[in-house]
Figure (cartoon, rainbow, N blue to C red):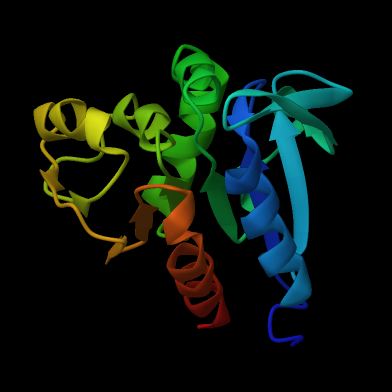
Length: 178
């Protein structure tokens, strides 16, 4: 499958991302032909959280401060509890995500990933899903929160948890194929 060979995708992450929520979309996108960069405020490598303990380390392709949203066709925000909490407190990360939301390019966030998007102030009126513990935060941001495997509203694709990854990845690839 090479339908995304001219597409470039940014995965924005910090230490403590849920391992499968970064590796699964990255592998699916690359298998579809896309170029994927892992972007982080840190250089070198970032550690995954794998269910109940630390997991693998992933190479950071580009440091956030030198990454330009205009160079990418989509943004992926993996979950994990620690990762989005760090990103939402990082002004550069919030601005990076905000540029994608405003651009109309696909923004895909899974599990706790939408926490970073809340900080953009651009979610009011959107229909989204997430890990259930975020529903109050998302509702307070003006979101119509639903408990569904995957929700695609405008340029925003969201899913709840790792068991939703097949639908999440498929919808992201479909959105990038247009």
